[in-house]
Image (cartoon, rainbow, N blue to C red):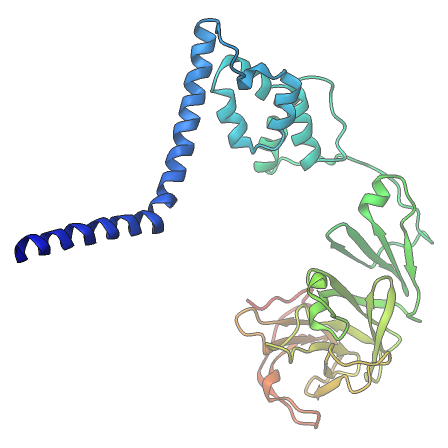
Length: 353
C-alpha cells in the first residue's frame, strides 16, 4: 500500500513538473514553429492555386490587386524582396514592379533623376556601382558667396557644409542648397584671417543640455586676431583669448578622458595652450588650463595620439617636433615635454597613430 501511494505521488509530481515546464519554456519554441508552419502552408496554397483554379471562396493573398501588394512590399528589405520573387509567378511580378524599386531608389538617392521604366535594373546597377566605389558626380551647381576669394578651409558635417574665406565663415545646408533655397549663413565675429577649423561633440561642452543633442557638433575656429571661437546654431557661443599673437592651429581631437577633456592650440608665440570647452561664460573665463613652453618658433601643426589621448605632438616652423604628456601639465611655466626631435624639410601635416 505504501509503495502504491509513493508511485502515485511520483506520477503526480511529474505531471505538475511537465505543466510547469510548458508554462515557462515551451511557448517560446512553439510560436516560431507555428509561424514557420503558417508560412509553408501559405506557400503550398499559392502553388496549388497556380496549378488548378480554386472553387472555394477563401480569400488568399493573391486575391489582392498588384498595387496593394506592391505597397505592402515597399516595407520589405532587399533580401525579403528577393525571397518574395521566388515564391510564385504572380508575386514575382509584384516584387519586380517599378513602384517598389522607385521607393528603394528614393530612399537611398533622393535627389537622383529617375527613368520612367526599368527601375529595378537601375537600382541594382547603382547599388553595385556604389559597392565597387564607382562614383559619378550627380550634380553640378553654383554656390554664390560674398566674394570671389578661394576657400581657406572646408568642413562637411552630415548635411552642413562650412567653409572660411579670410575672416568670414559661411555655412550652408546641402538639402536646402539642392532644393534651390537660400540657406547660406555668414559668421563674421573674427577680425582677421581664420587659420584652422575643427568639429567637436556638443556633449563635450558646457552647452550640452539633453540626450537628444548627443549627435550634434560644435565648430571651433582659430584666427590671426589672437582668439579662438566656439560656434553653435549659427552664432558664436564662446571666445577664448590668451595667446600673445595669432593662433595658428588647433588639435584634431580633444585631449584626455572622461569629463576633463581639453582643447589644445598652437600660436605664433611658440606656446601650446590647453582650454576647457566645458567652462561657462560668453568670454570663456577660466577656460585656460595650462600653457606649455618649449618651442622657439611658431607652432604650425599638432595632433593627438590615437593610442593615448593625453599625448600631443606639435611641430613648429623650424621643423622641431615635441611630444607632450598633458596629464602632467599645470597653469605654471612647467614643461611637460616627454620627447623631442626634428624632421628634414617642411612638414605639411602630422598624424599620430
